[in-house]
Structure formats: C-alpha cells, structure tokens
Length: 290
Image 1: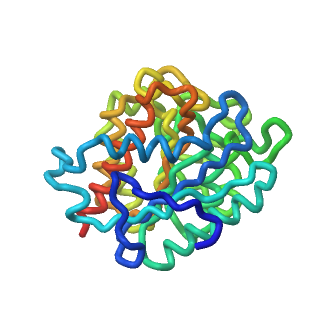
Image 2: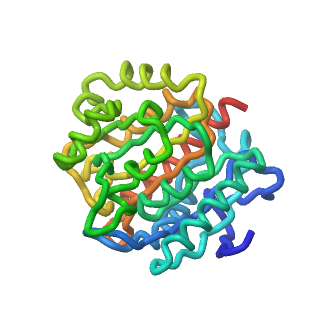
C-alpha cells in the first residue's frame, strides 16, 4: 500500500502477513487541529512500544491473543498537516482496503479527526463513541473539520440514531442544544460509574444486528488514568471500567475501530500503556468470536 512508513516489529512485537490477517493495525499520526496540546504524531509508535511490554495472554478471557488471531501491522500512514484532504484520503483509502479484504481495521491516532476519514470507508454503521467531549460543534476556531467537530461532521451522513456517546462530561451550549434537537443518545461518566453494566448491555442491545464502529478517545478516562491526552477532563471513568465496556461490546459485529488523542510529550507512559491494553482487549473480543 502506498503512503505508508513500514513498522517492524508491529503491535505486540508480532506482524503476521497481511494476506492471513484477521485484524490489521495502521497508524494515522495526524497532528493538525489541536487547540491545546500537540504531539499526536508520536502516538502510534508509543502505543506499539507499550504493547510489546504487556502480556499477550488475557486472564479475563482465558486466551492468548496471538494464538487465536493473525494480526498484521501496516505501519504508519504519512500525514501532511498542511494537506488535511490528502492525509484524510490516505486514511479512508487504507481503511477501505482493509475492510474490503474482509479484515478488521484498528486505527491508532493521532487526533480524533481521523475518525471522520475512517468512517468514510463504511456505510450504515452504528458508532459507539467513548469520549469526555461530545465533538458536536459545527465549527471550531474557524474550521468546520477538526477534533472538536468530528462527530458533527460524521452526522452529515450518519443518522443520529446510529450514534451513541459514552463517558461524555463536557460540551458547549451549542452542542447540548444540537444533541437534544437531534436526539443523540448519550450517557455521561457519572451515569456509567453508577450503572455501567446495565447501560452497556442496553447499548449493545441496540447495536446487536448492526455493523459496529468503535471510536475511543483516551480522554474518556479520568486524567488519573490517562494524563497524556490532548484535552484532559476531570471526572472520567477508570481504565478497568473502559475494559469492562469493551468486553460487554465484545459480542457485537465489530467492523472497525480507532484509539485516538494520545499526546506522548505530555505522557509519563501511563496513557500509552492504557491505550495498548485497550487494544489488547479489543483483539481479545475479536478472538472470542473466531
């Protein structure tokens, strides 16, 4: 595939041949629209580094990820911050290729804007969006497409009933009014903490017969568990609570996902390891369906 910087070894230290892969990692180190911290471009490498220092056997699932799955890692897409359309096109085309080849793409960000480009590779998906922020602004800092508008842009083609937001705890008045008018389903972090299992099962029930895309902004976690994100927001869920959500969603028909918003220059390694563990949990849920 063109426009890629190859990575050897890949996620977890493994890199099976693409042709035999069940799941495929690709880095999208887009770093173009940050309104606070920058340094997203280093994130995929740091997540991979952390992944090689975690066990591949998941006690919670009783399986070794790489014994059950063939996992390939294409490396990082070359992102050009001054060319958002060009960079975005590379994301869309690569994700589309992986999907067309009947494999599950796992995109490592990079800023959250990559979700918009990744979703363009799919039709009629149900998006489960885990985030501290609603990302529903129509425009931010003079731009209609960026990390704070990504879900609003996704809704330009996605019906509102196909989006559910979990862990949200910060938004503008404009976003709150839009979400209410569009009837976008959402559960804040406090609700999740108090009733996680029931909420997760309710969401899973609505998505059970649909193709599911999972978008995880690491700032859904409380800064105590993920200090190295672009826009930390107090009052989030724990790493364990995030892993529990992923396990409950494990029976769904996952067709793609992304893990975004890690900013390594502001991280002590805690967030990178959380991101890598979350990726392992996703691989574990995929493995259990094989």
